[in-house]
Image (cartoon, rainbow, N blue to C red; front, side):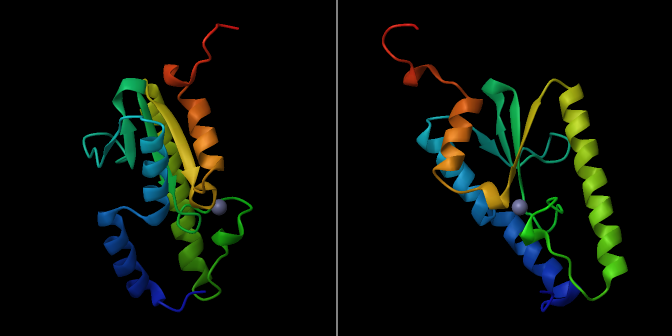
Length: 143
Ligand SMILES: [Zn+2]
């Protein structure tokens, strides 16, 4: 699991961060297909949300299961070496995620978390279309 070692992994994560991760791109593409407008890398918002939909006052975090310690997810399996180091790191990450969500919500934002393991079409598209019930999909007569 931990073949890269700590520094190799950090370097890799920095590289990934700049461009947007693969799951993030899946989410963006699903939003595009629903004709939802969004912005990325809004560093003026607390916690640097991955995706922001200003019109919906909504932010989306696309969380890597490993880094954000997705509960019960097999992608969040722990490295067997340096267990204490990783344990401390995951606890920090989790606390930070909670703080970020609370702060943004307190400022009136709806906060959506999409886990890497959930970033698959078409399930994701369905979920997003429920979160953003846009008028374009309405049937002709109101029910
Ligand atoms: Zn997961």
